[in-house]
Each structure stands twice: as structure tokens, then as C-alpha cells.
Image (cartoon, rainbow, N blue to C red; front, side, top):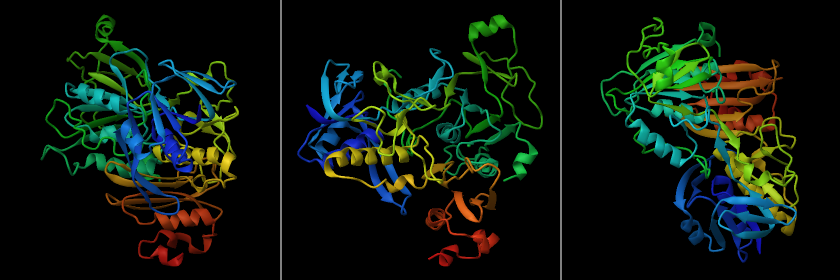
Amino acid sequence: MGKFVVVGGGIAGVTCAEQLAISFPSEDILLVTASPVIKAVMNFKQVSKILEEFDVEEQPSTMLESRFPNIKIIESGVKQLKSEEHCIFTEDGNQLVYEKLCLCAGAKPKLICEGNPYVLGIRDTDSVQEFQKQLTKAKRIMIIGNGGIALELVYEIEGCEVIWAIKDKAIGNTFFDAGAAEFLTSKLISEKTEAKIPHKRTKYTTEGMKKEARTKAKADTVGSALGPDWHEGLDLKGTKEFSHKVYIETMCEVKKIYLQEEFRLLKKNSLTFPTDHHNESVTTDNETWPVYVELTNEKLYGCDFIVSATGVTPNTEPFLHGNSFDLGEDGGLKVDDHMQTSLPDIYAAGDICTASWQPSPVWQQMRLWTQARQMGWYAAKCMAATRLGDIDMDFSFELFAHVTKFFNSKVVLLGKYNAQGLGSDHELMLRCTKGQEYVKVVMQNGRMMGAVLIGETDLEETFENLILNQMDLSPYGEDLLDPNIDIEDYFD
């Protein structure tokens, strides 16, 4: 009988299994994963008290077993969970009895349209490889969605027209407000520094981005999610000889998708790639495309294929039958502040779970790899604590902190960086040097509640401390962001 069983070979599952293996070196830890490769956290760096940076590396599962001889990997999907019997049944006929179980099965992409061969969901390494293969033959693609993966793709793709449809006013609204979006958008306009084709300008036009917004300050076996820098070393290049051409259709969603034959019978016209947003494109596209997309703003475009990057749904399906889990509004398994689900001896971590404890005022759950690692680590600590004694609430849930890269710029997000849940009772302070850095601070009653830092600002540690200690900053006023004042000296 396996005392500890972990399901899922992504960042949360592997981190959880590793931590259990360290806590109980003489016991076997079983890791059940449908994929022969696992995601390992490498080059872990604690940047500050809470911010952490790391690489995510895909490795054959044998490497994990050689690092931790007491981790035993069972390469199979889960068919059924019988929680009352403390037992899981795997696809390959195994029956595993557990003392404690941690479910880290991740999430799967929400596809805008199931079963259409021209719609690709990008979530894991397999789907990225499929995308890369399709892209080599493509002249034009359409990207639907406004999350992290869409942002990365739009910047990385070369030699292929990209029509990017987002339902928001500005790009990357999960991560930025319109001001930060505008700052990053200028990076799309300027030539990419490492563009592989020299002397070709990027063409960038945007549809529906209002002037006010600019001046004011976003598979069957489910593979595990992509980690940071997932596109490094991938050659994302289409058939055409230019660096990159992006056109953004804002405030719209997909109304209908037509295959070529359906479209021909409709006798509708599709639009060419818009060349300039001042001159609305009304020219009819004479080229025939494999698939056509009608948007809710009545525009119709043909393309080679569609990338659906519209977010994820927790992958709870294999575990629900016959078990009465409490589920969150987003479909995740609800967990308490010890990562326990509503069923005894079953824990969950990462994208599959919904944090349902009373969160700190400056923390929120987001399905990101940093939280998958923290939750996997903390779940293992809590599972171990039932035998070894009590545990403090993990510090990493006191403050939301995430560091990443968009459009080749370092991006640090802290606390309620988009004033999430603060209503209108807050102020924003901004500092922006075009092309270099963008600093936004969210203040409430003189206290810092969140921040967005783009570029090499070196402010993350100071701001992290100011958010954590909730010091009254009203006496400093605008000096807080004055570039001529060394803010770190103030708060040493």
C-alpha cells in the first residue's frame, strides 16, 4: 500500500512528490502520471522574501526517480477514484490504496470549438509542437484570447500574418491595465531586437482602441502546463518573408467558424489583412482559406488555422464520479488553508484546485506556474504535518507575487496589481519611460496594495516590503515614484 499517492506530473505534482520524498526518505511515494515526461523546477532562485524565479524543464520521469529513489512513478491515467475505500484505479488496471492522496491533475484548455481540425488549443508541450508544425505551412493565423500564452505567441510568431481577437479593450487584461498594455504595445510596433529577418519593419495596427484608453493609465491525456520561457528555442515561423505583422481586433469574440465549403455556399465576403487602422479595410479577400472566422463585430476573416488561447478548465473529470467533492465556481476542487479538499485524506494543488480559504487582502489565486509550485510544496508539508505535527500557513500566500517576461521585458506583478476587488476606492501612481520601464502602484488609504513593474526597475523588493508591512506612505506623496530619489534608502 502506498502511504502517499500524488496524481499529476506537472509542476504541482512533481514538487509535492519531491517534498514528500524528502520528508519521508524511507517510504515510497507514488506519482501517477499519464505522460512519460514530467515537469521539474530547475535553477530555483529566491529573488526576495516572496518573489521567486525558476526554470521549468521537461525531463523523462526516470530522472526524477534517480534523484529521489523513493519516488515510484506509475505511468498511467486515472480511471476512477473511490474516496470511501481510499483507492484509485488507473487506466492500466492498477489499484492503488492510499493513506493520503494529492490531486494535481492540472487543467485543460477551453476550446472555442470542439472537434474542429482547424482549431488548436495551446496548453502543453505536445500542443506547442503541433502548432509549430502547422505554422510552417501558414500564411495567416488567427489567435483568440488575451492571456499569457496569447501574449507570448503574438510576439514570437514571424513570417505569418496574425489577426488577434480579444474580448477586452486592451491586450493582456489579466495582467495589465490599458496603460501597461500601451507601453508593451509599443514593443510590438518596434522591430524585435533578435528578429531573424533584418530590415523588415513590423506592421502593427489596432482596431477599436479608443483615444481615451491610450491617455489613461491583460489533447486526450492532458499534458501539464507550459512553464516560463516555453517558447525559447522554438522557431515559430510561417511561410512569409517578414518579421511580424499583427492586427488586433478588440472588444469582440468568435461568433461562428465556417469550413471552406460552408463558406463558399454562404456567398459571403471575407476581408483582407488590414494594412492600416486609419483606413478601415473593406477590400474583399480573393484568396481561399481552409477556415473562416466570423467575429461578433461582424468582421469575417479567412485563415490557415485558429489558435484558441481562451483559458483553462480544472481537470477534475476523472475524480468526480461517485465522490462528493465541493467545487468552486470555476469548477476546481475547493481546498482549505491546508490544501485539503472536502473529502478526508484528499488534498489538491495547482490548476485543479480552487483556494477557498479567506485570502490575505493582497493575495489572489491565479493559475500560474509560480502558484503551482508553491501549492504543491505546501500541500506536501500539510500532508506530512498530519504525522509530524502542525505547520504555519505558508508565507507565499500572504502576498501575490509573480515575475515573468512579456515581449522580452521583465514583468513583476505584486499584490492587487490591477486593483482587483478594491472598487473605486483606490488611487494609481504611474511612472513611465517609453521603451524602458513602466511602474504602476495601487494605493488605498495611503497604503500600497499592489504594483506592476515592467523593465529593469529594481523596485520589486522594496515594494514587496511596503505592501507586506502596510506602512502609511501618505507623507511621501509623489516622491514615492520620483526617479531622482533612491526609494530603497528611505525604507532600509
